[in-house]
Length: 259
Image (tube, rainbow, N blue to C red; front, side, top):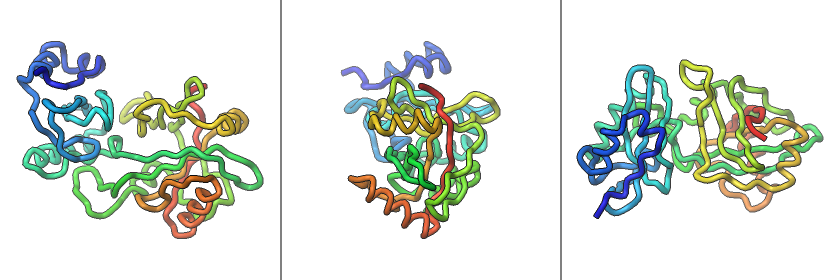
């Protein structure tokens, strides 16, 4: 039975046809692995698996993930992050947690409209599905907000003003669908995906109308378990207010990187 391994064109271009064919033929890929996204076991012979290539300034590391978690792709990261990931990958081969790279953390993203200072703004609420450890460590401290503050996100003590813009970040919309949140790439001016939708996300017409009016999106982030899945925007707003009052909300406003 052929291996259920996906090697994207961009990964193939980085590793070369010979190595890609070896992977697909089973010569250089493990049968079982720890998913680099959800960090649970996977089996290349039993379930579709993505090859994920982490590329730093001097080093590249090939990892594996459930195709249901993330597609096969090249992920630019800093050399420091990658060295930490190498240690985690080595540990993961012995049954320990797989690499903890922020770009690959599983994030829940919800679109909604929020009223700020008398005006309606389109917002994306971002919440990890579990605690986030600093790259190269296994936790258990959740440092999600600390990592975002280091990137330039600011604390939101109350939902009474628009968060400050953050340089180099943007929200990618195409054909009216949400594709990704982009951040500056390490050592380059090119943007890379901080979060990428598994498939383009539909957003409400009212949300798109607010985007067209404001030409910016408020990205509001909280630790795992803070906001949760809220069925209505009024309940989402109440959860955001509670998170802000509790010091568990950071945010930034971002321009559009699409149409």
